[in-house]
Length: 159
Length: 159
DNA sequence: AGTATTGAGGACTCTTTTATCCTAAATTAA
DNA sequence: TTAATTTAGGATAAAAGAGTCCTCAATACT
Ligand code: SF4
Ligand code: SF4
Picture 1 (cartoon, rainbow over the protein chains, first blue to last red):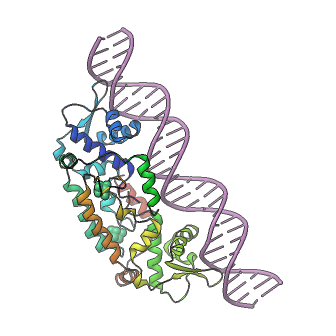
Picture 2 (tube, chains in turn orange, purple, red, blue; picture 1 turned 180 degrees about the horizontal axis):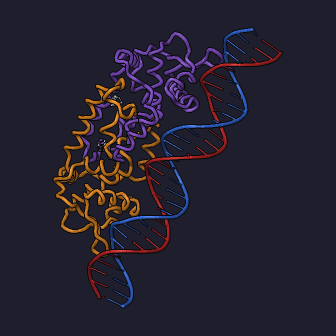
């Protein structure tokens, strides 16, 4: 199990790229998808969720695309996660016993409750501008490794 | 996204129940499943993974079932997670960029790398005996809520 | 030996996630 | 007005996760 769904990861990569490129004009989803080596159709659906949540403005037609509805500096990573994966990760019990924590907490309750706060704070602290700056400063990558590298990686991986 | 897969959660609940019941004799999977209100067939498959990893001994026939291969006190929660979900959660990048962290770390790298250690330590610290003791001391539950409660819960939930 | 019990394991179904494809609607520019 | 571009959104397919069912093998007990 990964921490975030693939949709969510793709969405995060896309908004970081958008933050790098600046928010002056609309950026076409097709271009973003090409930069990130993702399916444009799939990314469209994902970014639609961000648009519906009011995080992005979208605009059709030539010169259209998406842009942030607020400055990237004000958009926290958790907002992206919330729009795509929901807040379950930060709010639900580690043992999947929904509705717990009040009357009948589960064995891990204390430890996990404490930890959820740390995790949530991590995602609430990072804003898109900062992440974008990191990427540029350190010359980090947003694309996936080449297919070859992934195959190699999977061979060495447990399961 | 949940932190752990359902299989993993079911597996954890099962071994905690086993730790509560003691390790003197084999405990039938069917009985465990009934106690936890799970499908016996499904739980069988899950516990098979623990048997294959050497965490449990299994024994067929009347009086058969499963039992720990080591004292519950020595089995850490992370071993259960590793056998069912793998260690991806504790070892992979939050942005899903496999093989990262070395040459070309991603934007979240530092924060997440630091956090992964905390998360991993949490799961490495808890042993089954301790969890079982918690459950008993506090009268906590391992079963899910009634179907009715779950439906009610889902209605109130975001998505 | 025979029978009931219980885990092993394969086949299959259902659901959710991930991904692709196609059409429609909005918009720009010529 | 026409043509090209680009998001919206539905239909569909492929893959993975979750769950069910059936048969086989091992074992205990009579
Ligand atoms: S009691 Fe706490 S740890 Fe357990 S399921 Fe509820 S919220 Fe999670
Ligand atoms: S660089 Fe760090 S945070 Fe980024 S994907 Fe790799 S391990 Fe995860």
